[in-house]
Structures are given as structure tokens and as C-alpha cells.
Image (cartoon, rainbow, N blue to C red; front, side):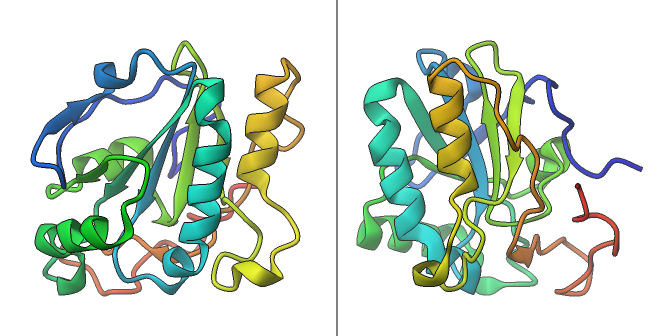
Length: 193
């Protein structure tokens, strides 16, 4: 059984409210040569540990036509810290260089097959999936990371090369699904490679 979006599949559309009060959909990013959609949240130690690496990767490739969009799909009933209000506070405090969208129904997380926070999905100009998985190999302690798979995938694609490692296992906290235990996840779901 496939739990997450498969390589070469088209990016599912979305229409979600961001922390700036605006609603965004996939077409709002049509000018991007590469679109990175990633699932994140406010509280996860793997997100908090790697946010600055993600920021640096986004800023590094901004001039190359790469845009990032972050989505929080966690159930507020499971994790109150992942509420829209805390998302707004987080963005006001951190000033990340991407829109931060709220997937309150979790429909978009299901459409993408988001498994963990963070979980990255990289789409080419035609919005076909060319990389999915982790950002770095130690998101909880970024200073100990030895591999930035996201950056490597972006560099190779932008250079017109085939992505050497297009699929990695996402590392982080599982998505907090409504009506499920905080740590619920099918055991084999995150074993993508």
C-alpha cells in the first residue's frame, strides 16, 4: 500500500488560509520554476531543530526560481500548540520566507500523503514530483547533520541533472491525525526506500 505521493505524480491542488490572512492555491505559485511544498508545525523538535537549515535552503535558491510553501495539518485537538493562532505568532516571531498555510481538515495532508513534520515534496515546472522525503539527515540536531538531501535535489535539478536520490524517508514527528493517538502511524508508512 502506498501512503505518500509517488514520484512523477502531479501536485494536488489546495486552497488554504495562511498566517497573513490570505488564501492560497497551487496556481498562486505558477511563476515558480520549482515548488517545494512541505508539511511542518509549530512544536515538533525535528521542525524546530531544522527550521534554520530550511530557511537557508529556501533563501539560497530563491533567485533560481524556487519557491517554498509550508503547510500545518496537525490536529489542534491532539496538539493545541499547532493552532492557527500559534501559527500566526510563530510567523510573526520567525519571519520565515514562505507562506504558512493551515490545513484544518487534513484533506491536503491526505492528498499529498504527508507522513511526518517536516516532510518535503519538490515539484518541477510542470508540477510533477521529483523529490520527496527529509530535508537533512539529522533534523532534530541540525548541527550534527551530514547530508542536506533537499538542497542536493534542488542543486541537481537546477543544473539539469537527474536527481541522484529522489526518495528518502522523512524524519520527524508523525502528523497528528484527528481522532487518532498522538503517535499513531502505520508502522510501514514511513519506510519509503
